[in-house]
Length: 315
Length: 183
Ligand code: SF4
Image 1 (cartoon, each protein chain N blue to C red):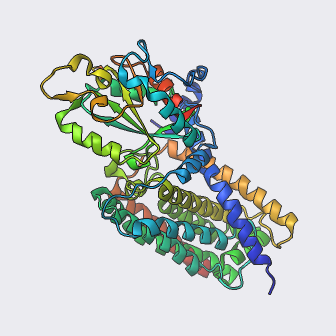
Image 2 (cartoon, rainbow over the protein chains, first blue to last red):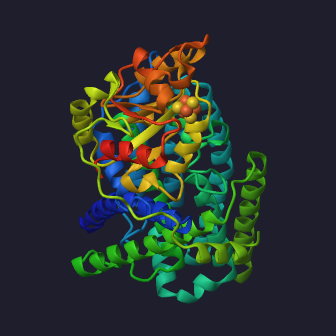
Image 3 (spheres, rainbow over the protein chains, first blue to last red):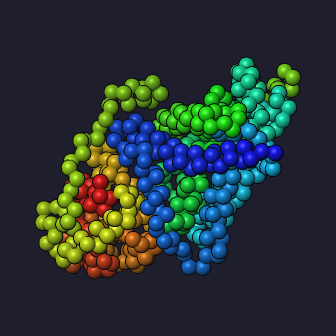
């Protein structure tokens, strides 16, 4: 057993941590330009993060140790996600398989951590945000499972690296009905999971419409830095996964420096493209009413289910 | 509006933001026609400079309306709107004082808002800047002596920066914010 996949996982985590603030910067900058503003530049989220890491957190009186632990747990889950999902290279780890169940559980650990963080602050909005977040998580996780399951049927393995590698080697499967349906379903749930429009508005100031923001209202300083970095990582990793499923070219097949470097550059390109696309779509869109969100997510579940059916019919 | 109309509108409008004025001189703490005249704005500058060094060009702003007539709010909205675009200098409005570096207070402090204002400032992590925007926030302005008024912002919490004017010009608000972000 070689250490190569482990090394690649480390590279992936580093690349993801560097790219995550830039992805947010690109979406905010694109949005600003489309609104006729100049925008703070793509480096602004990185500046915000640097400042927040230097600030001592102010925790409300009466909070439990959960307030201290939850941001770290959330960040750990996001870093693990960055190691497990094939971003730069499609090499399965020997110890922890990049299996769909593992990936979904890691996502869920982070989701639960941030929901507990929202409850622990003791404010009304935090609890409301947590309850909404869990509702959405309950609708999102099955769709992720079913969508990735549909993708795994033609490959014969539920490990994400193998799925991406198979799509790269047989590009015909990308345009197959099952593949398209599954990726569309996955894209919708990625938007829900990462709190983007039309499910949640990342730049809202209205507490009653918040989901993600409401949970972190009581979080400050370094704690907030970890929470922010973790949610940005989530967005980048899941966008990177969708990008690699749609355009699997450039993903390294070995741990040699050349292909890995190429993989990192390809990832940056795909993320930039998806970030601009995401911001452009968001400008043209309004947030869905909360009670309509389950309909959208049920729709994406149906798509994922159809994808499974289609892949069995074809196979 | 259809998507095509929206795209056409975005294409036709282009960039609305005006060109950025030169970076303001770092020293004076007050902004506006009578800079630094009142006591609350005088001693602020060393503290603001110290905070500025720790913020690295990023300032999250929490706005507190302590009893304003809403004139200041309109100018504040303009300062963060597309024309003045305060966000390009690294300032951003946030929803919680826990996330903020700047507490921006408008209006005279009314009886009901005195305690919430104190709590909001206390809930903002250090290093922080308290900014009094508008004549009311600086020295009670036209509401001086009114029955529901406790006092100006400086009477309740230490003020580091103030912006004069009734209502203050968005450009002056932007200048004050740039003193905090240093950009
Ligand atoms: S300073 Fe003028 S505009 Fe601002 S709150 Fe007072 S009266 Fe209204």
